[in-house]
Image (cartoon, rainbow, N blue to C red; front, side, top):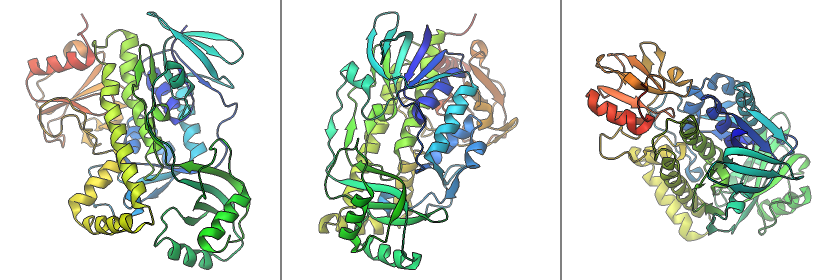
Length: 474
């Protein structure tokens, strides 16, 4: 019997598996696909995801395979630079091939001891007071204490649970792919510059030696399960640009819509949802993969605490309470960005107005912090503005702060040098550093790097240690 079965070995599922293994949880990941994704689509890791990679010692390995880009210019593709003083040691976007980041996260989970089985599709589930019985295609049944659906937008787990997925269906569809072209780069650049004045869902960008990343609006909404053909691209390129640029030799072709949906619940008993199983939205702003990975970092330590027996009674419920509002905000900002991408006069007028407003530092900063998720603040009750926010990486007496979070434990950063983690020292590390560059006498960090308490009183600290880390050890 496993402690947790995870359906889906994409970035969310692999990240969750690794987070659970940090706490010794027995994990099986089942993936319906027999092979990892092969098409070389470039995805972007935003600031908060880079910080989380740094917390687990993965960032250097990930950066080897990626390309840094400025952190600005992502809200509705409005070209405004990021402020130079964003509150992060990793204030950039990292473009990285999707197969590479998925492989690195899967290797990380496997290295920590997660079991991964491919070619295994979940077809049924039953849960009781003790656990979940998971049925696979072919009739095999497995038993676990919990099941987490990380199996994508068409999540079988979500459907089997009967969890509603309300929202809006796709109204517009876009073709995306990588292929070679038959005309000079200068000709392409001039035509793209002309069209992008009014059509924001259109580009041809060089990728590698001969290939181009091609994005073009589709004529209607098709079946996303069926990839488009090269002729579809040629037809839509001619409709938008008057030429098909001689495209040929595609590496991969896909389509995406602007459907926007949010699961009514993230948990039903012993079954939970994360990533695209819980929320889908247009890819504008590049937030999808990041949102799922951040779900996994929030859920992992809480589910592990439940399984290890030290979780406070309501800890697992905070997963939905914290992450569902974040997803709601992402859905809203992608709705807004999608409207600003319309060629209609009204949205274009709003776009011009917002472009002017983004020259105001506070407006630009707010939108960048929203896209990159460094502006997320969980509701932990009344307290200083830092409460509920993530803490940036900084120098401490024992090295870098994020390096001290590598094992997925809590951390007491104590500038007073007189507090203690006491009976929670098996779950919370203690670092005394009066010179730490944080505007508080002492902060208690959760394993996901969010500040759970600020103060200098031991009795008050003990109350919050109990709130987040359960009863003290004997």
